[in-house]
Image (cartoon, rainbow, N blue to C red; front, side):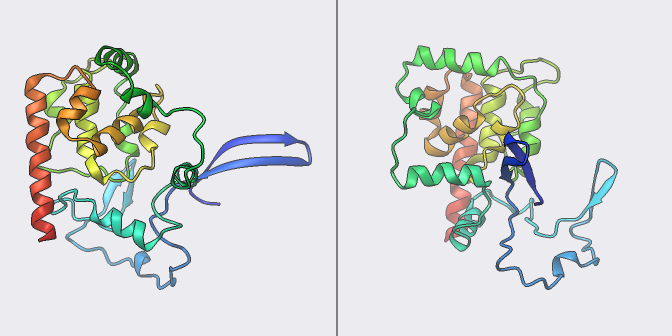
Length: 245
């Protein structure tokens, strides 16, 4: 079973039970015809191979990063076309189905808890979480939808090198807005975080609320950074309107 990780092993000798988490393939195996075009050795000059850890990788399912406006329509199309096998890990998909079928949720989620907190309590919650950040950038590497936007926000423009933990919530909010509504709910940012920071909850907030409401739910951001986020948010909304028209 490829693209799978062992989550838990239980049982006894001769009677084991193994729980696996399958990562998203972004390809529906039931619809794949095996034509082999994705394995073609002809490499376009427009999309040269990238060197990662001494190996060359070629994008077979390609998104033009220069033209991408992060509108999220490709993700929506994927969800509609592949309702059962889209770009979500199996465990996250099961959690979403529990909500969709209106099953009882015994424990409130961190998101739900935050909505019931006072501003002071929310500030304490995020301060405790963010101060654990070791600035490993693993959340950047794990995200399947985070691509470079030359006109967008960049952590390197706001957060200097060194500094562990980094300036928060600046570092984490700018990263969340870099992903924006292209987030596919895979939760890899949170699952791979060595410090257990609730990055998925932060991403949910950014996707669900306008920036002014986000700043209330995640307090502590400076005025200049807030203005920059609002400008980028408005720019992206305008780009989506132009594309849909």
